[in-house]
Length: 135
Length: 212
Image (cartoon, rainbow over all chains, first blue to last red; front, side, top):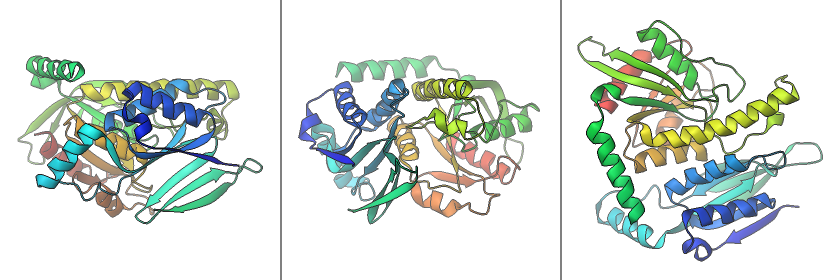
Protein backbone atom coordinates (compact mmCIF):
# COMPACT_ATOMS: atom_id res chain seq x y z
CA UNK A 1 0.00 0.00 0.00
CA UNK A 2 1.23 3.47 -0.86
CA UNK A 3 0.32 6.41 1.40
CA UNK A 4 0.11 9.92 -0.02
CA UNK A 5 0.18 12.86 2.39
CA UNK A 6 -1.00 16.22 1.14
CA UNK A 7 0.71 19.22 2.75
CA UNK A 8 -1.02 22.57 2.12
CA UNK A 9 1.44 25.44 1.66
CA UNK A 10 -0.02 27.11 4.77
CA UNK A 11 1.53 24.36 6.89
CA UNK A 12 5.07 25.29 5.91
CA UNK A 13 4.59 29.00 5.18
CA UNK A 14 5.68 30.19 8.63
CA UNK A 15 8.48 27.68 9.10
CA UNK A 16 12.17 28.44 8.63
CA UNK A 17 13.99 26.74 5.73
CA UNK A 18 15.39 24.14 8.11
CA UNK A 19 11.94 23.58 9.61
CA UNK A 20 10.33 23.10 6.20
CA UNK A 21 12.96 20.62 5.05
CA UNK A 22 12.83 18.73 8.34
CA UNK A 23 9.05 18.44 8.17
CA UNK A 24 8.96 17.19 4.56
CA UNK A 25 11.86 14.82 5.03
CA UNK A 26 10.33 13.35 8.20
CA UNK A 27 7.14 12.51 6.29
CA UNK A 28 9.17 10.86 3.51
CA UNK A 29 11.12 8.90 6.11
CA UNK A 30 7.80 7.49 7.37
CA UNK A 31 7.53 5.89 3.91
CA UNK A 32 4.82 8.31 2.77
CA UNK A 33 4.76 10.22 -0.50
CA UNK A 34 4.54 13.96 0.12
CA UNK A 35 2.33 16.08 -2.13
CA UNK A 36 3.25 19.64 -1.22
CA UNK A 37 1.11 22.49 -2.51
CA UNK A 38 3.46 24.92 -4.27
CA UNK A 39 7.23 24.70 -4.19
CA UNK A 40 10.22 25.36 -2.01
CA UNK A 41 12.66 28.15 -2.76
CA UNK A 42 15.44 27.14 -5.16
CA UNK A 43 18.02 27.24 -2.38
CA UNK A 44 15.74 25.10 -0.21
CA UNK A 45 15.57 22.46 -2.94
CA UNK A 46 19.36 22.03 -2.78
CA UNK A 47 19.23 22.13 1.02
CA UNK A 48 16.66 19.33 0.83
CA UNK A 49 19.09 17.27 -1.26
CA UNK A 50 21.89 18.01 1.21
CA UNK A 51 19.74 17.07 4.20
CA UNK A 52 18.64 13.89 2.43
CA UNK A 53 22.25 12.86 1.86
CA UNK A 54 23.02 13.40 5.55
CA UNK A 55 20.14 11.12 6.52
CA UNK A 56 20.91 8.19 4.20
CA UNK A 57 21.40 4.92 6.05
CA UNK A 58 20.53 1.25 5.76
CA UNK A 59 16.77 1.90 5.87
CA UNK A 60 16.52 5.31 4.21
CA UNK A 61 17.97 5.35 0.68
CA UNK A 62 17.03 8.89 -0.26
CA UNK A 63 14.16 10.48 -2.15
CA UNK A 64 12.67 10.98 -5.58
CA UNK A 65 11.80 14.61 -6.15
CA UNK A 66 9.68 16.35 -8.77
CA UNK A 67 8.43 19.91 -8.98
CA UNK A 68 5.59 20.81 -11.28
CA UNK A 69 5.23 24.52 -11.79
CA UNK A 70 2.65 25.51 -14.39
CA UNK A 71 3.87 29.12 -14.30
CA UNK A 72 7.53 28.28 -14.92
CA UNK A 73 7.21 28.55 -18.71
CA UNK A 74 4.92 31.59 -18.54
CA UNK A 75 6.92 33.72 -16.14
CA UNK A 76 9.46 35.95 -17.73
CA UNK A 77 10.44 39.54 -17.66
CA UNK A 78 8.24 42.58 -17.69
CA UNK A 79 5.63 43.68 -15.21
CA UNK A 80 4.11 40.19 -14.95
CA UNK A 81 7.47 38.63 -14.06
CA UNK A 82 8.17 41.37 -11.50
CA UNK A 83 4.72 40.95 -9.96
CA UNK A 84 5.04 37.16 -9.78
CA UNK A 85 8.53 37.47 -8.27
CA UNK A 86 7.29 39.93 -5.65
CA UNK A 87 4.26 37.83 -4.69
CA UNK A 88 6.35 34.64 -4.52
CA UNK A 89 9.01 36.43 -2.49
CA UNK A 90 6.49 37.71 0.05
CA UNK A 91 4.00 34.86 0.24
CA UNK A 92 5.98 31.89 -1.10
CA UNK A 93 5.35 30.04 -4.32
CA UNK A 94 1.99 28.33 -3.92
CA UNK A 95 1.49 27.45 -7.57
CA UNK A 96 2.19 23.97 -8.82
CA UNK A 97 3.12 21.00 -6.71
CA UNK A 98 6.18 19.32 -5.22
CA UNK A 99 6.29 15.56 -4.95
CA UNK A 100 8.75 13.95 -2.56
CA UNK A 101 8.74 10.17 -2.39
CA UNK A 102 11.02 7.86 -0.43
CA UNK A 103 13.37 6.04 -2.82
CA UNK A 104 12.42 2.74 -1.19
CA UNK A 105 8.90 3.15 -2.60
CA UNK A 106 9.22 5.50 -5.57
CA UNK A 107 11.50 4.24 -8.30
CA UNK A 108 11.14 7.18 -10.65
CA UNK A 109 8.98 10.23 -11.30
CA UNK A 110 8.54 11.17 -14.94
CA UNK A 111 7.08 14.48 -16.00
CA UNK A 112 5.63 15.49 -19.32
CA UNK A 113 3.45 18.47 -20.15
CA UNK A 114 0.14 16.72 -19.43
CA UNK A 115 0.84 14.12 -16.79
CA UNK A 116 3.07 12.92 -13.98
CA UNK A 117 4.08 9.29 -13.89
CA UNK A 118 5.12 7.84 -10.60
CA UNK A 119 6.88 4.51 -10.87
CA UNK A 120 6.63 2.65 -7.58
CA UNK A 121 8.67 -0.35 -6.59
CA UNK A 122 6.93 -3.68 -6.45
CA UNK A 123 8.42 -5.15 -3.29
CA UNK A 124 7.53 -8.74 -4.21
CA UNK A 125 9.60 -8.95 -7.38
CA UNK A 126 11.39 -5.59 -7.54
CA UNK A 127 9.61 -4.65 -10.78
CA UNK A 128 8.41 -1.15 -11.61
CA UNK A 129 4.70 -0.39 -11.32
CA UNK A 130 3.26 2.63 -13.10
CA UNK A 131 0.87 5.05 -11.38
CA UNK A 132 -0.32 7.85 -13.64
CA UNK A 133 -1.63 11.14 -12.33
CA UNK A 134 -3.12 13.79 -14.57
CA UNK A 135 -2.39 17.42 -13.81
CA UNK B 1 17.37 40.24 6.41
CA UNK B 2 20.56 39.67 8.41
CA UNK B 3 21.19 36.54 6.34
CA UNK B 4 20.74 38.52 3.13
CA UNK B 5 23.18 41.23 4.28
CA UNK B 6 25.73 38.59 5.27
CA UNK B 7 25.45 36.92 1.84
CA UNK B 8 25.77 40.28 0.08
CA UNK B 9 28.89 41.26 2.04
CA UNK B 10 30.48 37.84 1.50
CA UNK B 11 29.85 38.08 -2.23
CA UNK B 12 31.11 41.68 -2.36
CA UNK B 13 34.39 40.97 -0.59
CA UNK B 14 34.90 37.72 -2.46
CA UNK B 15 34.64 39.56 -5.77
CA UNK B 16 36.68 42.52 -4.56
CA UNK B 17 39.76 40.44 -3.81
CA UNK B 18 39.35 37.81 -6.47
CA UNK B 19 42.01 37.83 -9.12
CA UNK B 20 40.92 37.13 -12.69
CA UNK B 21 43.51 34.37 -12.76
CA UNK B 22 41.68 32.42 -10.06
CA UNK B 23 38.45 31.86 -11.95
CA UNK B 24 36.85 28.59 -10.87
CA UNK B 25 35.02 26.66 -13.57
CA UNK B 26 32.91 23.86 -12.11
CA UNK B 27 31.67 20.72 -13.80
CA UNK B 28 28.29 19.83 -12.30
CA UNK B 29 25.55 17.39 -13.13
CA UNK B 30 23.97 14.06 -12.28
CA UNK B 31 26.11 10.93 -11.82
CA UNK B 32 27.42 9.27 -15.00
CA UNK B 33 26.80 12.28 -17.22
CA UNK B 34 30.47 12.39 -18.17
CA UNK B 35 31.86 15.20 -15.99
CA UNK B 36 35.16 13.46 -15.36
CA UNK B 37 35.46 12.39 -18.99
CA UNK B 38 35.01 16.02 -20.00
CA UNK B 39 37.50 17.12 -17.32
CA UNK B 40 40.01 14.65 -18.74
CA UNK B 41 39.32 15.85 -22.28
CA UNK B 42 39.95 19.48 -21.29
CA UNK B 43 43.10 18.58 -19.37
CA UNK B 44 44.45 16.37 -22.17
CA UNK B 45 43.75 19.08 -24.74
CA UNK B 46 45.45 21.91 -22.82
CA UNK B 47 47.79 20.31 -20.27
CA UNK B 48 48.56 16.98 -21.90
CA UNK B 49 47.57 14.97 -18.82
CA UNK B 50 44.39 13.45 -17.37
CA UNK B 51 42.64 14.67 -14.25
CA UNK B 52 40.15 12.13 -12.88
CA UNK B 53 39.45 8.42 -13.07
CA UNK B 54 36.32 7.41 -14.97
CA UNK B 55 34.04 4.38 -14.73
CA UNK B 56 30.69 3.09 -15.92
CA UNK B 57 29.64 2.61 -12.30
CA UNK B 58 27.92 5.72 -10.93
CA UNK B 59 29.62 7.92 -8.32
CA UNK B 60 33.17 7.21 -9.47
CA UNK B 61 34.10 10.78 -8.47
CA UNK B 62 33.35 11.12 -4.78
CA UNK B 63 35.67 13.99 -3.91
CA UNK B 64 36.11 17.41 -5.42
CA UNK B 65 39.04 17.38 -7.88
CA UNK B 66 40.81 20.57 -8.89
CA UNK B 67 43.22 21.19 -11.73
CA UNK B 68 44.79 24.62 -11.58
CA UNK B 69 45.75 27.07 -14.28
CA UNK B 70 44.23 25.64 -17.42
CA UNK B 71 44.62 28.00 -20.35
CA UNK B 72 42.18 27.49 -23.22
CA UNK B 73 42.56 29.31 -26.53
CA UNK B 74 39.84 30.17 -29.03
CA UNK B 75 39.70 28.85 -32.60
CA UNK B 76 41.93 31.65 -33.94
CA UNK B 77 44.35 31.31 -31.04
CA UNK B 78 43.99 35.00 -30.18
CA UNK B 79 41.89 34.91 -27.00
CA UNK B 80 42.84 33.01 -23.90
CA UNK B 81 40.69 31.86 -21.00
CA UNK B 82 42.49 30.84 -17.83
CA UNK B 83 40.71 28.95 -15.06
CA UNK B 84 40.95 26.38 -12.31
CA UNK B 85 38.85 23.37 -13.30
CA UNK B 86 36.73 21.84 -10.55
CA UNK B 87 35.38 18.34 -11.20
CA UNK B 88 32.57 17.59 -8.74
CA UNK B 89 30.80 14.40 -7.62
CA UNK B 90 27.47 13.76 -9.35
CA UNK B 91 24.46 15.23 -7.61
CA UNK B 92 21.74 12.72 -6.76
CA UNK B 93 18.71 12.58 -4.46
CA UNK B 94 19.14 8.90 -3.63
CA UNK B 95 22.07 6.54 -3.15
CA UNK B 96 21.54 2.84 -2.58
CA UNK B 97 24.57 0.66 -1.96
CA UNK B 98 22.63 -2.29 -3.38
CA UNK B 99 22.84 -0.66 -6.80
CA UNK B 100 26.64 -0.97 -6.63
CA UNK B 101 26.35 -4.67 -5.80
CA UNK B 102 24.80 -5.19 -9.24
CA UNK B 103 28.07 -4.12 -10.84
CA UNK B 104 29.89 -6.94 -9.01
CA UNK B 105 31.14 -4.93 -6.06
CA UNK B 106 31.44 -6.61 -2.66
CA UNK B 107 29.03 -5.46 0.07
CA UNK B 108 31.66 -3.75 2.22
CA UNK B 109 33.08 -1.88 -0.75
CA UNK B 110 29.58 -0.94 -1.98
CA UNK B 111 28.61 0.45 1.43
CA UNK B 112 31.84 2.46 1.60
CA UNK B 113 31.25 3.81 -1.90
CA UNK B 114 27.67 4.80 -0.99
CA UNK B 115 28.84 6.60 2.17
CA UNK B 116 31.53 8.48 0.26
CA UNK B 117 29.05 9.32 -2.49
CA UNK B 118 26.60 10.95 -0.04
CA UNK B 119 29.44 13.10 1.33
CA UNK B 120 30.45 13.93 -2.24
CA UNK B 121 26.98 15.26 -3.06
CA UNK B 122 27.02 17.45 0.06
CA UNK B 123 30.48 18.81 -0.84
CA UNK B 124 29.48 19.50 -4.45
CA UNK B 125 26.48 21.56 -3.29
CA UNK B 126 28.62 23.43 -0.73
CA UNK B 127 31.07 24.39 -3.49
CA UNK B 128 28.35 25.92 -5.70
CA UNK B 129 28.79 29.33 -4.11
CA UNK B 130 32.52 29.37 -4.94
CA UNK B 131 32.09 28.91 -8.68
CA UNK B 132 32.58 31.70 -11.21
CA UNK B 133 31.12 29.65 -14.02
CA UNK B 134 29.61 26.20 -14.35
CA UNK B 135 29.36 23.63 -17.11
CA UNK B 136 26.35 21.43 -16.41
CA UNK B 137 27.21 18.08 -17.98
CA UNK B 138 24.17 16.01 -18.95
CA UNK B 139 23.87 12.64 -20.62
CA UNK B 140 22.02 13.58 -23.83
CA UNK B 141 20.58 10.06 -24.12
CA UNK B 142 18.61 10.58 -20.89
CA UNK B 143 15.60 12.66 -19.87
CA UNK B 144 16.89 16.23 -19.38
CA UNK B 145 13.83 17.21 -17.31
CA UNK B 146 14.99 15.31 -14.22
CA UNK B 147 14.57 17.37 -11.07
CA UNK B 148 18.28 17.22 -10.21
CA UNK B 149 19.14 18.96 -13.50
CA UNK B 150 16.44 21.59 -12.99
CA UNK B 151 17.46 22.19 -9.38
CA UNK B 152 21.15 22.62 -10.27
CA UNK B 153 20.43 25.03 -13.12
CA UNK B 154 17.84 26.93 -11.05
CA UNK B 155 20.31 27.37 -8.22
CA UNK B 156 23.04 28.63 -10.52
CA UNK B 157 20.59 31.14 -12.02
CA UNK B 158 19.58 32.30 -8.52
CA UNK B 159 23.28 32.86 -7.73
CA UNK B 160 23.90 34.66 -11.06
CA UNK B 161 26.59 32.17 -12.04
CA UNK B 162 27.16 31.84 -15.82
CA UNK B 163 26.01 28.44 -17.11
CA UNK B 164 26.90 26.39 -20.16
CA UNK B 165 25.02 23.15 -20.68
CA UNK B 166 27.02 20.34 -22.24
CA UNK B 167 24.84 17.59 -23.71
CA UNK B 168 27.36 14.78 -23.60
CA UNK B 169 27.45 11.38 -25.35
CA UNK B 170 26.24 12.60 -28.77
CA UNK B 171 28.15 9.66 -30.23
CA UNK B 172 25.39 7.35 -28.93
CA UNK B 173 22.34 6.57 -31.07
CA UNK B 174 19.84 7.49 -28.35
CA UNK B 175 21.32 10.99 -27.96
CA UNK B 176 18.72 13.75 -28.38
CA UNK B 177 20.39 17.13 -28.12
CA UNK B 178 17.24 18.95 -29.32
CA UNK B 179 15.42 17.68 -26.25
CA UNK B 180 18.19 19.10 -24.03
CA UNK B 181 17.94 22.44 -25.86
CA UNK B 182 14.15 22.42 -25.47
CA UNK B 183 14.49 21.77 -21.73
CA UNK B 184 16.82 24.76 -21.19
CA UNK B 185 15.87 27.32 -23.86
CA UNK B 186 17.39 30.27 -21.99
CA UNK B 187 20.89 28.70 -21.84
CA UNK B 188 23.65 27.93 -24.32
CA UNK B 189 23.64 24.20 -25.02
CA UNK B 190 26.46 22.39 -26.80
CA UNK B 191 26.24 18.77 -27.88
CA UNK B 192 29.54 16.90 -27.65
CA UNK B 193 31.22 13.60 -27.06
CA UNK B 194 33.84 14.10 -24.38
CA UNK B 195 34.99 10.52 -24.84
CA UNK B 196 35.74 10.82 -28.56
CA UNK B 197 36.38 14.57 -28.76
CA UNK B 198 33.45 15.23 -31.09
CA UNK B 199 32.41 18.91 -31.25
CA UNK B 200 34.85 19.85 -28.50
CA UNK B 201 36.07 22.97 -30.34
CA UNK B 202 32.49 24.20 -30.43
CA UNK B 203 32.35 23.62 -26.69
CA UNK B 204 35.48 25.76 -26.11
CA UNK B 205 34.16 28.55 -28.36
CA UNK B 206 30.84 28.61 -26.51
CA UNK B 207 32.69 28.58 -23.19
CA UNK B 208 34.41 31.81 -24.23
CA UNK B 209 31.03 33.42 -24.92
CA UNK B 210 29.53 32.28 -21.62
CA UNK B 211 32.52 33.28 -19.46
CA UNK B 212 33.22 36.68 -21.05
